[in-house]
Image 1 (cartoon, one colour):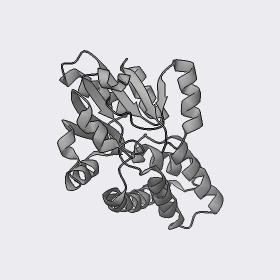
Image 2 (tube, helix red, strand yellow; image 1 turned 120 degrees about the vertical axis):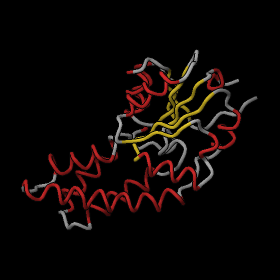
Image 3 (cartoon, one colour; image 1 turned 180 degrees about the vertical axis):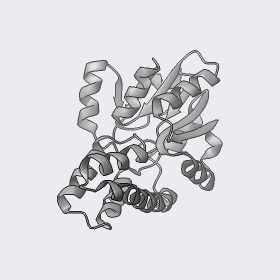
Image 4 (cartoon, helix red, strand yellow; image 1 turned 90 degrees about the horizontal axis):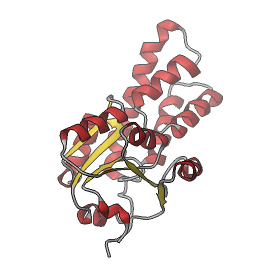
Length: 218
């Protein structure tokens, strides 16, 4: 049996792990920026940062765009930040309802032992609403998201649950960093990752497993 079944507490990232939504969210952010008529070069720089730092909250990303990339006057920043956030959030609510589950995820989540949680960079109330609408909430004890940083989400989950062995399952640097900060095991699911080569390199350095498909219980 695959070692993924040897834990009693599981914490899942959402985008690219539960839902095939990474590419959809990158496109949504691109469209939100393009709607404000920034130059293609600035849009590309923002979107590249967004894709390469997936898993951090949208609040982090948009603040970074406004303060460090987009060429804005101080009195423009709060208005532009709000416009990008509003547009992106609106698109996310729609795409989350239609994004496909990653292949075999339902079989996996029903076969895994122990308690399961979601800890995502996506906005928490939005994520909970979508999981309830899609009937996915029944598989998890609770669903957590931003603006709380992912490492803190993991710490809160681990503190609230009695467990002997916990696992974080993600596809991005932020997921690995959160697992390291909380001293728990990590498995990287890469088919839909925005940074698969970086995660494979990190796996070689830190000796965690990278998987291309959800393992079946045999």
